[in-house]
Image (cartoon, rainbow, N blue to C red; front, side):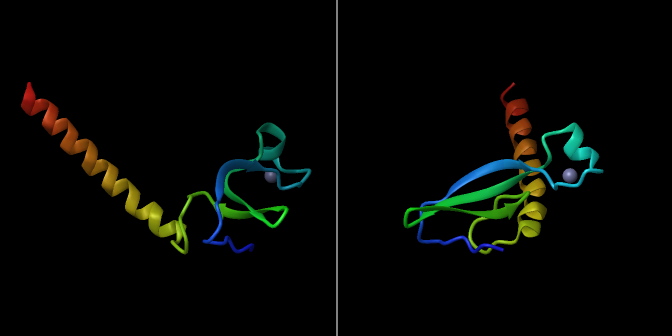
Amino acid sequence: MTEIPSNQHITYQLQYRKCGKASCSTCRNTQGHGPYWYAYWRQGSRLRSGYIGKVRSPHGQKPAAAKAAKPKKSARAIKSEEYTTAARM
Ligand SMILES: [Zn+2]
């Protein structure tokens, strides 16, 4: 796996990838597997890229941890928002 440098300007992009298997129905019927996050940066005059995964995670943070923490937060945010709206009415 390519290491993504922390001292560079990184561009993140969501992309689909084809696995190349002739028997894969996902690649045949859709744009491919994904979308997955890819990082792009410049190293000298060369454009480098690195695979990140389904969840975009900054420096060293594991995608699984970010995934587990997200739903709880957003659910709580929606609840409090609904409560505020109801209280105003
Ligand atoms: Zn495939």
